[in-house]
Amino acid sequence: MPLAAFGLYVLLFKVSHPYNLNPDNILRNQWLQLVATGGAAWWVFGGLATAGLCGLLFQRHVVPQGWLWLPFSLLFVGASWMIETRYTLVPFVLFLALRRPEAAWAERVTLVGWIVLSGWLAWNVFDLRFML
Image 1: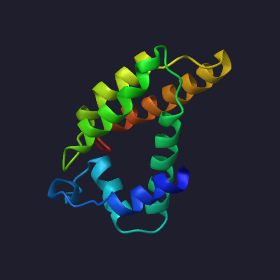
Image 2 (image 1 turned 120 degrees about the vertical axis):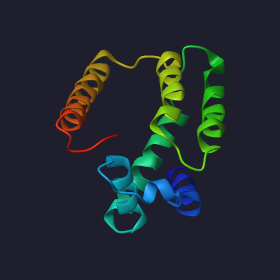
Image 3 (image 1 turned 90 degrees about the vertical axis):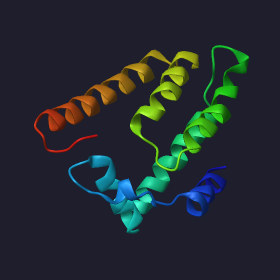
Image 4 (image 1 turned 30 degrees about the vertical axis):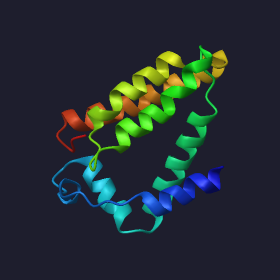
């Protein structure tokens, strides 16, 4: 399955929207331009996308029908030529609401990781180093 997911990334992912080609100080645009040039960034982004898709496919849900949210989300987000961060908020929130919590230690490790990442992002945004 990871090979199929990475194959989809190779075939379908393109950085072609004109707004994504405007670097300014927007972190997302800078990262996408780096990915578009190829090299290590392209492999890292593809690996993260592959791991994310595989993780979502094997997510346990609190209700048996929770798996239906994944194809709906892919259609919802993938229907846009350029994906703004705000488009992904609703699917992410519903994934979190529908998922079955894992072991307590895994939840704590994940929470600490998100606290560190969000703190770093907020600090850099408030320091005007970049925008999300």
